Image (cartoon, rainbow, N blue to C red; front, side, top):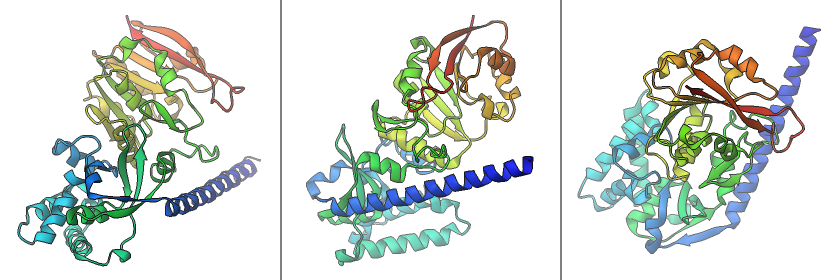
Length: 381
């Protein structure tokens, strides 16, 4: 009977994955068709308003090293300086900077024979820059951030760098920010809830919902906690996913936030969402499973454990959190129907921690009828 049940569940799971995969392909097709019909011309006078948006855990280090803002202008990235040198054929400083970027901060740096790949990329880029046949160049794809009207490059940094270096107007395909997030910020692990390909948590930009998820309570949940729990504190977010809670905590005044997340792709998405919210300073995302030895070096006063306890491999690591003398608060959201007695039994907080229930949240805004989630604050007396 168990084998039969297991077989049925595998088939159901497989069917859901196929359905979600098909829906994503349809969404991408619709987005591509929409972008092809929506184009506009960018003129030289608007070049200062074009921003780099393809952040990942590698190039974010370059942006930080150069002291650039969270959303740097394309003009300030090495692509444009290299393109100008290629056109002028007088100076190689920009080209060398571009090679340095490729070697240390791009995905090419992960290749086995990265020097060969870098040489090929530079040669390919130079051919693009020197080409006069613009009809052979695909139009870049961009979106626009509504609040600031910044043009964010989703696809085509090198192509745009060519136009900027040559000071030429160029046409781009446009998709809305919500479509851009679905197309370029999605993740199998983030959209894995099988709920019509919706993210688990709603994605916000400057506190405005851009892509609606199953849950719309990110800020409401944090507002349940007293301001002093986050304000000026160093915060550790366990199971940070794509960083929405970490972003919201920084917006609430946290001094610094470290998000611990085991899924590599989610780290890149976290940085992109942080950049959309103009945050990089004192916000960091680390690819690792939650392990006390790995996170013990972080200086944290507040720890976030939102709907994560049952997913942790070893609860001993949670219990070891209490060893930190700096730890003052643990913010807990239980799983649906989970009681505080069950949570206390699982993590066994010391006697000097006061446990306070702050309220209950719906399972999701779509299913308020299902078991609710409790929210508690564990505070050192």
